[in-house]
Image 1: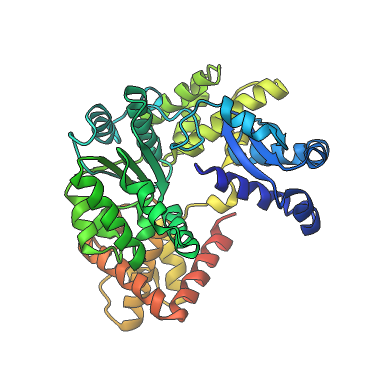
Image 2 (image 1 turned 45 degrees about the vertical axis):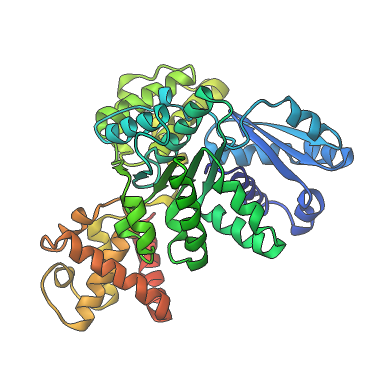
Length: 438
Protein backbone atom coordinates (compact mmCIF):
# COMPACT_ATOMS: atom_id res chain seq x y z
CA UNK A 1 0.00 0.00 0.00
CA UNK A 2 2.26 2.79 -1.26
CA UNK A 3 -0.20 5.46 -2.39
CA UNK A 4 -1.30 8.06 0.15
CA UNK A 5 -4.79 8.05 -1.35
CA UNK A 6 -4.90 4.24 -0.94
CA UNK A 7 -4.07 4.62 2.76
CA UNK A 8 -6.72 7.29 3.27
CA UNK A 9 -9.37 5.27 1.43
CA UNK A 10 -8.54 2.26 3.60
CA UNK A 11 -8.89 4.37 6.75
CA UNK A 12 -12.27 5.66 5.59
CA UNK A 13 -13.33 2.08 4.89
CA UNK A 14 -12.43 1.04 8.43
CA UNK A 15 -14.15 4.09 9.97
CA UNK A 16 -17.31 3.42 7.95
CA UNK A 17 -17.76 0.20 9.94
CA UNK A 18 -17.80 2.22 13.17
CA UNK A 19 -19.46 5.53 12.16
CA UNK A 20 -22.64 6.43 10.32
CA UNK A 21 -22.48 7.70 6.75
CA UNK A 22 -23.78 11.04 8.05
CA UNK A 23 -20.79 11.38 10.41
CA UNK A 24 -18.37 10.41 7.64
CA UNK A 25 -19.85 12.96 5.22
CA UNK A 26 -20.11 15.71 7.84
CA UNK A 27 -16.56 15.56 9.14
CA UNK A 28 -14.49 13.98 6.36
CA UNK A 29 -16.07 14.90 3.00
CA UNK A 30 -13.72 17.86 2.50
CA UNK A 31 -10.83 16.36 4.46
CA UNK A 32 -7.77 15.26 2.49
CA UNK A 33 -4.54 13.41 3.31
CA UNK A 34 -1.37 15.47 2.99
CA UNK A 35 1.51 13.18 3.89
CA UNK A 36 2.43 9.92 5.58
CA UNK A 37 6.01 9.44 6.74
CA UNK A 38 7.59 7.17 9.29
CA UNK A 39 4.76 6.82 11.85
CA UNK A 40 2.76 10.01 11.34
CA UNK A 41 -0.21 10.83 9.11
CA UNK A 42 -0.89 14.46 8.22
CA UNK A 43 -4.38 15.44 7.04
CA UNK A 44 -6.07 18.73 6.18
CA UNK A 45 -9.56 20.06 6.82
CA UNK A 46 -10.71 23.57 5.80
CA UNK A 47 -11.87 24.93 9.16
CA UNK A 48 -10.46 25.08 12.66
CA UNK A 49 -13.81 23.92 14.02
CA UNK A 50 -13.64 20.69 12.04
CA UNK A 51 -10.00 20.25 12.99
CA UNK A 52 -10.94 20.40 16.66
CA UNK A 53 -13.79 17.91 16.24
CA UNK A 54 -11.63 15.45 14.31
CA UNK A 55 -8.83 15.75 16.88
CA UNK A 56 -11.13 15.35 19.88
CA UNK A 57 -13.58 12.73 18.61
CA UNK A 58 -11.94 10.74 15.84
CA UNK A 59 -8.15 10.85 16.30
CA UNK A 60 -8.18 7.63 18.29
CA UNK A 61 -10.21 5.79 15.64
CA UNK A 62 -7.93 7.05 12.84
CA UNK A 63 -4.69 6.06 14.62
CA UNK A 64 -6.19 2.67 15.48
CA UNK A 65 -7.01 2.17 11.79
CA UNK A 66 -3.41 3.08 10.90
CA UNK A 67 -2.09 0.60 13.43
CA UNK A 68 -4.31 -2.07 11.92
CA UNK A 69 -3.00 -1.27 8.43
CA UNK A 70 0.71 -0.95 9.24
CA UNK A 71 1.10 -2.99 12.42
CA UNK A 72 2.77 -0.17 14.38
CA UNK A 73 1.61 2.87 16.41
CA UNK A 74 0.88 6.08 14.50
CA UNK A 75 0.49 9.77 15.35
CA UNK A 76 -2.00 12.11 13.66
CA UNK A 77 -1.50 15.76 12.72
CA UNK A 78 -4.56 17.71 11.55
CA UNK A 79 -3.99 20.97 9.67
CA UNK A 80 -6.65 23.65 9.21
CA UNK A 81 -7.23 26.89 7.29
CA UNK A 82 -3.91 28.54 6.36
CA UNK A 83 -1.68 25.91 7.96
CA UNK A 84 -1.47 23.69 4.87
CA UNK A 85 0.54 26.14 2.76
CA UNK A 86 3.00 26.78 5.60
CA UNK A 87 3.40 23.06 6.16
CA UNK A 88 4.02 22.28 2.48
CA UNK A 89 6.61 25.06 2.23
CA UNK A 90 8.44 23.66 5.24
CA UNK A 91 8.73 20.20 3.67
CA UNK A 92 11.84 19.44 1.64
CA UNK A 93 10.80 16.06 0.25
CA UNK A 94 10.67 15.34 -3.45
CA UNK A 95 7.01 15.50 -4.48
CA UNK A 96 7.66 13.31 -7.50
CA UNK A 97 8.15 10.24 -5.31
CA UNK A 98 5.55 8.57 -3.06
CA UNK A 99 5.10 9.60 0.55
CA UNK A 100 6.72 6.42 1.93
CA UNK A 101 10.17 6.71 3.48
CA UNK A 102 12.86 4.05 3.81
CA UNK A 103 12.93 2.67 0.28
CA UNK A 104 16.67 3.03 -0.33
CA UNK A 105 19.36 0.63 -1.50
CA UNK A 106 21.05 0.46 1.90
CA UNK A 107 17.83 -0.87 3.45
CA UNK A 108 17.26 -3.53 0.80
CA UNK A 109 18.38 -7.00 1.93
CA UNK A 110 20.09 -8.83 -0.93
CA UNK A 111 19.84 -12.61 -1.28
CA UNK A 112 19.95 -15.25 -4.00
CA UNK A 113 16.32 -14.55 -4.90
CA UNK A 114 16.82 -10.88 -5.74
CA UNK A 115 20.52 -10.19 -6.26
CA UNK A 116 20.24 -9.88 -10.05
CA UNK A 117 17.35 -7.42 -9.83
CA UNK A 118 19.21 -5.45 -7.15
CA UNK A 119 22.42 -5.29 -9.20
CA UNK A 120 20.46 -4.15 -12.25
CA UNK A 121 18.69 -1.45 -10.23
CA UNK A 122 21.98 -0.14 -8.84
CA UNK A 123 23.48 -0.06 -12.34
CA UNK A 124 20.51 1.94 -13.62
CA UNK A 125 20.71 4.37 -10.71
CA UNK A 126 24.42 4.90 -11.39
CA UNK A 127 24.00 5.34 -15.15
CA UNK A 128 20.41 6.33 -15.97
CA UNK A 129 19.51 6.08 -19.62
CA UNK A 130 22.78 4.29 -20.34
CA UNK A 131 23.03 0.98 -18.50
CA UNK A 132 19.72 -0.79 -19.11
CA UNK A 133 16.71 0.89 -20.65
CA UNK A 134 14.00 0.02 -19.92
CA UNK A 135 14.56 -1.95 -16.74
CA UNK A 136 11.60 -4.29 -16.20
CA UNK A 137 11.38 -5.85 -12.71
CA UNK A 138 8.73 -8.49 -12.12
CA UNK A 139 7.63 -10.83 -9.36
CA UNK A 140 4.79 -11.56 -6.97
CA UNK A 141 3.41 -9.01 -4.53
CA UNK A 142 5.40 -8.18 -1.41
CA UNK A 143 8.87 -9.20 -2.63
CA UNK A 144 10.53 -5.77 -2.99
CA UNK A 145 9.81 -4.57 -6.53
CA UNK A 146 8.52 -1.19 -5.35
CA UNK A 147 11.44 -0.88 -2.94
CA UNK A 148 13.94 -1.20 -5.80
CA UNK A 149 11.89 1.11 -8.02
CA UNK A 150 11.87 3.89 -5.44
CA UNK A 151 15.48 3.26 -4.44
CA UNK A 152 16.46 4.06 -8.02
CA UNK A 153 14.50 7.29 -7.81
CA UNK A 154 16.04 8.25 -4.46
CA UNK A 155 19.59 7.56 -5.67
CA UNK A 156 19.16 9.54 -8.89
CA UNK A 157 17.60 12.42 -6.95
CA UNK A 158 20.53 12.44 -4.51
CA UNK A 159 23.03 12.41 -7.36
CA UNK A 160 21.20 15.02 -9.44
CA UNK A 161 18.66 17.07 -7.52
CA UNK A 162 17.65 18.83 -10.73
CA UNK A 163 16.55 15.56 -12.39
CA UNK A 164 12.86 15.50 -13.23
CA UNK A 165 11.36 12.33 -11.81
CA UNK A 166 7.84 11.01 -12.35
CA UNK A 167 6.37 8.08 -10.43
CA UNK A 168 2.99 6.56 -11.24
CA UNK A 169 1.12 3.33 -10.57
CA UNK A 170 -0.45 1.61 -13.54
CA UNK A 171 -4.00 2.10 -12.29
CA UNK A 172 -3.32 5.76 -11.44
CA UNK A 173 -2.01 6.33 -14.98
CA UNK A 174 -5.36 5.04 -16.27
CA UNK A 175 -7.37 7.22 -13.89
CA UNK A 176 -5.33 10.32 -14.63
CA UNK A 177 -5.70 9.83 -18.36
CA UNK A 178 -9.48 9.40 -18.08
CA UNK A 179 -9.73 12.50 -15.89
CA UNK A 180 -7.62 14.53 -18.35
CA UNK A 181 -10.07 13.65 -21.12
CA UNK A 182 -13.01 14.75 -18.97
CA UNK A 183 -11.26 18.01 -18.03
CA UNK A 184 -9.84 18.62 -21.51
CA UNK A 185 -6.30 18.67 -20.07
CA UNK A 186 -4.73 15.92 -22.19
CA UNK A 187 -1.76 18.05 -23.15
CA UNK A 188 -0.93 18.75 -19.51
CA UNK A 189 -1.23 15.03 -18.74
CA UNK A 190 1.12 14.09 -21.59
CA UNK A 191 3.71 16.69 -20.61
CA UNK A 192 3.70 15.37 -17.05
CA UNK A 193 5.23 12.06 -18.18
CA UNK A 194 6.81 12.69 -21.58
CA UNK A 195 9.35 15.30 -20.55
CA UNK A 196 11.06 13.81 -17.51
CA UNK A 197 14.53 12.37 -16.93
CA UNK A 198 13.25 9.30 -15.09
CA UNK A 199 9.88 7.57 -15.38
CA UNK A 200 9.02 5.03 -12.66
CA UNK A 201 5.92 2.93 -13.36
CA UNK A 202 4.66 0.56 -10.68
CA UNK A 203 2.32 -2.35 -11.55
CA UNK A 204 2.20 -1.78 -15.30
CA UNK A 205 0.00 -4.90 -15.72
CA UNK A 206 -3.10 -2.78 -15.08
CA UNK A 207 -2.89 -1.11 -18.49
CA UNK A 208 -3.16 -4.42 -20.38
CA UNK A 209 -6.45 -4.59 -22.27
CA UNK A 210 -7.00 -0.81 -22.06
CA UNK A 211 -6.58 0.12 -25.74
CA UNK A 212 -6.55 3.90 -25.39
CA UNK A 213 -4.27 3.81 -22.37
CA UNK A 214 -1.80 1.49 -24.10
CA UNK A 215 -1.75 3.87 -27.06
CA UNK A 216 -0.92 6.79 -24.76
CA UNK A 217 1.73 4.87 -22.86
CA UNK A 218 3.29 3.65 -26.11
CA UNK A 219 3.89 7.23 -27.24
CA UNK A 220 5.11 8.24 -23.78
CA UNK A 221 7.56 5.33 -23.79
CA UNK A 222 8.86 6.15 -27.26
CA UNK A 223 9.22 9.84 -26.45
CA UNK A 224 11.39 9.11 -23.42
CA UNK A 225 13.34 6.23 -24.94
CA UNK A 226 14.30 8.17 -28.05
CA UNK A 227 15.42 11.07 -25.86
CA UNK A 228 17.69 8.75 -23.89
CA UNK A 229 15.68 9.08 -20.68
CA UNK A 230 15.51 6.20 -18.20
CA UNK A 231 12.36 4.09 -17.81
CA UNK A 232 11.88 1.61 -14.95
CA UNK A 233 8.80 -0.61 -14.82
CA UNK A 234 7.51 -3.18 -12.34
CA UNK A 235 4.86 -5.84 -12.81
CA UNK A 236 3.52 -8.93 -11.09
CA UNK A 237 4.37 -11.00 -14.19
CA UNK A 238 6.65 -10.88 -17.26
CA UNK A 239 5.31 -9.23 -20.44
CA UNK A 240 4.73 -12.57 -22.19
CA UNK A 241 2.20 -13.50 -19.49
CA UNK A 242 0.19 -10.26 -19.73
CA UNK A 243 -3.02 -11.14 -21.47
CA UNK A 244 -4.14 -8.43 -23.92
CA UNK A 245 -0.91 -6.45 -23.77
CA UNK A 246 -0.23 -5.03 -27.24
CA UNK A 247 2.68 -6.65 -29.05
CA UNK A 248 4.39 -3.32 -29.71
CA UNK A 249 4.53 -2.64 -25.96
CA UNK A 250 5.52 -6.21 -25.15
CA UNK A 251 8.49 -6.09 -27.51
CA UNK A 252 9.62 -2.75 -26.09
CA UNK A 253 9.44 -4.04 -22.54
CA UNK A 254 11.35 -7.17 -23.49
CA UNK A 255 13.88 -5.11 -25.45
CA UNK A 256 15.43 -3.79 -22.24
CA UNK A 257 16.69 -5.75 -19.25
CA UNK A 258 14.19 -8.03 -17.51
CA UNK A 259 14.88 -9.02 -13.91
CA UNK A 260 12.67 -11.22 -11.76
CA UNK A 261 12.42 -11.37 -7.97
CA UNK A 262 11.60 -14.71 -6.35
CA UNK A 263 10.46 -15.40 -2.78
CA UNK A 264 13.46 -15.13 -0.44
CA UNK A 265 15.17 -18.21 0.97
CA UNK A 266 15.18 -18.73 4.73
CA UNK A 267 18.61 -17.13 5.25
CA UNK A 268 17.45 -13.97 3.47
CA UNK A 269 14.18 -13.95 5.41
CA UNK A 270 16.10 -14.15 8.68
CA UNK A 271 18.37 -11.30 7.57
CA UNK A 272 15.32 -9.19 6.69
CA UNK A 273 13.80 -9.84 10.13
CA UNK A 274 16.99 -8.91 11.99
CA UNK A 275 17.52 -5.83 9.84
CA UNK A 276 13.96 -4.56 10.33
CA UNK A 277 14.17 -5.16 14.06
CA UNK A 278 17.46 -3.23 14.21
CA UNK A 279 15.85 -0.30 12.39
CA UNK A 280 13.19 -0.28 15.12
CA UNK A 281 15.78 -0.47 17.89
CA UNK A 282 15.23 -4.15 18.78
CA UNK A 283 17.31 -7.32 18.87
CA UNK A 284 15.06 -10.37 18.52
CA UNK A 285 15.94 -13.76 20.02
CA UNK A 286 17.27 -16.28 17.51
CA UNK A 287 14.39 -18.71 18.05
CA UNK A 288 11.86 -15.95 17.34
CA UNK A 289 13.71 -14.93 14.17
CA UNK A 290 13.76 -18.55 12.99
CA UNK A 291 10.09 -19.08 13.82
CA UNK A 292 8.96 -16.01 11.85
CA UNK A 293 11.20 -16.89 8.89
CA UNK A 294 9.92 -20.46 8.85
CA UNK A 295 6.26 -19.39 9.09
CA UNK A 296 6.10 -16.53 6.56
CA UNK A 297 7.88 -17.62 3.41
CA UNK A 298 6.73 -15.55 0.47
CA UNK A 299 5.82 -11.99 1.49
CA UNK A 300 8.37 -9.51 2.84
CA UNK A 301 5.69 -6.97 3.75
CA UNK A 302 4.07 -9.48 6.08
CA UNK A 303 7.44 -10.29 7.65
CA UNK A 304 8.07 -6.60 8.32
CA UNK A 305 4.53 -6.21 9.66
CA UNK A 306 5.13 -8.97 12.21
CA UNK A 307 8.39 -7.37 13.37
CA UNK A 308 6.65 -4.00 13.77
CA UNK A 309 3.88 -5.63 15.76
CA UNK A 310 6.39 -7.36 18.07
CA UNK A 311 8.24 -4.12 18.77
CA UNK A 312 4.92 -2.43 19.50
CA UNK A 313 4.05 -5.19 21.99
CA UNK A 314 7.39 -4.66 23.68
CA UNK A 315 7.39 -0.85 23.82
CA UNK A 316 3.71 -0.26 24.59
CA UNK A 317 2.72 -3.32 26.61
CA UNK A 318 6.20 -4.23 27.89
CA UNK A 319 5.58 -7.76 26.60
CA UNK A 320 8.44 -10.24 26.48
CA UNK A 321 9.47 -11.14 22.92
CA UNK A 322 9.16 -14.91 22.60
CA UNK A 323 7.56 -17.58 20.41
CA UNK A 324 4.15 -16.98 21.97
CA UNK A 325 4.19 -13.26 21.19
CA UNK A 326 5.50 -14.03 17.68
CA UNK A 327 2.54 -16.34 17.10
CA UNK A 328 0.16 -13.61 18.27
CA UNK A 329 1.82 -11.03 16.00
CA UNK A 330 1.61 -13.37 13.00
CA UNK A 331 -2.06 -14.03 13.70
CA UNK A 332 -2.68 -10.25 13.84
CA UNK A 333 -0.85 -9.50 10.59
CA UNK A 334 -1.92 -12.45 8.46
CA UNK A 335 -5.69 -12.28 8.58
CA UNK A 336 -8.21 -14.74 7.19
CA UNK A 337 -8.54 -12.76 3.97
CA UNK A 338 -4.89 -13.47 3.22
CA UNK A 339 -5.27 -17.26 3.34
CA UNK A 340 -3.22 -18.91 0.59
CA UNK A 341 -4.62 -22.29 -0.44
CA UNK A 342 -2.40 -25.20 -1.42
CA UNK A 343 -2.51 -26.67 -4.95
CA UNK A 344 -4.19 -29.79 -3.52
CA UNK A 345 -7.01 -27.69 -2.02
CA UNK A 346 -7.59 -25.84 -5.30
CA UNK A 347 -7.69 -29.05 -7.32
CA UNK A 348 -9.92 -30.74 -4.73
CA UNK A 349 -12.50 -27.94 -4.63
CA UNK A 350 -12.53 -27.46 -8.40
CA UNK A 351 -13.02 -31.20 -8.94
CA UNK A 352 -15.82 -31.28 -6.34
CA UNK A 353 -17.59 -28.37 -8.07
CA UNK A 354 -17.57 -30.29 -11.38
CA UNK A 355 -18.45 -33.64 -9.73
CA UNK A 356 -15.04 -35.08 -10.61
CA UNK A 357 -12.15 -36.64 -8.73
CA UNK A 358 -8.91 -34.71 -8.15
CA UNK A 359 -7.00 -37.34 -10.16
CA UNK A 360 -9.24 -36.54 -13.15
CA UNK A 361 -7.84 -33.01 -13.21
CA UNK A 362 -4.26 -34.07 -12.63
CA UNK A 363 -4.40 -36.79 -15.29
CA UNK A 364 -4.93 -36.93 -19.04
CA UNK A 365 -8.72 -37.20 -19.35
CA UNK A 366 -9.82 -34.97 -22.21
CA UNK A 367 -13.60 -34.73 -21.88
CA UNK A 368 -14.93 -31.19 -22.25
CA UNK A 369 -16.06 -31.03 -18.62
CA UNK A 370 -12.72 -32.28 -17.30
CA UNK A 371 -10.68 -30.02 -19.56
CA UNK A 372 -12.61 -26.92 -18.41
CA UNK A 373 -12.25 -27.89 -14.74
CA UNK A 374 -8.50 -28.45 -15.22
CA UNK A 375 -8.04 -25.06 -16.92
CA UNK A 376 -10.00 -23.25 -14.21
CA UNK A 377 -7.97 -24.93 -11.48
CA UNK A 378 -4.77 -23.75 -13.21
CA UNK A 379 -6.18 -20.23 -13.43
CA UNK A 380 -7.08 -20.28 -9.71
CA UNK A 381 -3.66 -21.64 -8.80
CA UNK A 382 -2.06 -18.73 -10.63
CA UNK A 383 -4.44 -16.20 -9.06
CA UNK A 384 -4.49 -17.43 -5.48
CA UNK A 385 -0.91 -18.62 -4.92
CA UNK A 386 2.67 -17.52 -5.60
CA UNK A 387 3.44 -20.58 -7.75
CA UNK A 388 5.27 -20.11 -11.05
CA UNK A 389 3.92 -21.56 -14.28
CA UNK A 390 6.49 -24.36 -14.02
CA UNK A 391 5.40 -25.16 -10.45
CA UNK A 392 1.75 -25.22 -11.53
CA UNK A 393 2.54 -27.58 -14.40
CA UNK A 394 4.14 -30.02 -11.98
CA UNK A 395 0.74 -30.46 -10.27
CA UNK A 396 -0.71 -31.92 -13.51
CA UNK A 397 1.61 -34.77 -14.44
CA UNK A 398 4.35 -32.33 -15.42
CA UNK A 399 2.51 -30.33 -18.05
CA UNK A 400 4.84 -27.78 -19.54
CA UNK A 401 5.00 -24.00 -19.06
CA UNK A 402 3.32 -23.14 -22.37
CA UNK A 403 0.39 -25.50 -21.76
CA UNK A 404 -0.32 -23.90 -18.37
CA UNK A 405 -0.03 -20.38 -19.81
CA UNK A 406 -2.38 -21.27 -22.67
CA UNK A 407 -4.96 -22.64 -20.22
CA UNK A 408 -4.79 -19.53 -18.03
CA UNK A 409 -5.20 -17.21 -21.01
CA UNK A 410 -8.17 -19.19 -22.26
CA UNK A 411 -9.93 -18.82 -18.91
CA UNK A 412 -9.12 -15.08 -18.84
CA UNK A 413 -10.75 -14.71 -22.25
CA UNK A 414 -13.80 -16.72 -21.19
CA UNK A 415 -14.26 -14.57 -18.09
CA UNK A 416 -14.77 -11.56 -20.35
CA UNK A 417 -17.13 -13.33 -22.75
CA UNK A 418 -19.10 -15.65 -20.48
CA UNK A 419 -20.64 -14.47 -17.19
CA UNK A 420 -21.23 -18.07 -16.12
CA UNK A 421 -17.47 -18.71 -16.03
CA UNK A 422 -16.97 -15.69 -13.77
CA UNK A 423 -19.71 -16.99 -11.51
CA UNK A 424 -18.12 -20.45 -11.43
CA UNK A 425 -14.75 -19.04 -10.43
CA UNK A 426 -16.33 -16.94 -7.68
CA UNK A 427 -18.18 -19.98 -6.35
CA UNK A 428 -15.10 -22.20 -6.30
CA UNK A 429 -13.02 -19.44 -4.67
CA UNK A 430 -15.72 -19.00 -2.03
CA UNK A 431 -15.74 -22.75 -1.40
CA UNK A 432 -11.97 -22.75 -1.00
CA UNK A 433 -11.99 -19.88 1.52
CA UNK A 434 -15.03 -21.13 3.42
CA UNK A 435 -13.93 -24.74 3.74
CA UNK A 436 -10.20 -24.26 4.25
CA UNK A 437 -9.49 -20.60 5.05
CA UNK A 438 -10.40 -20.57 8.72
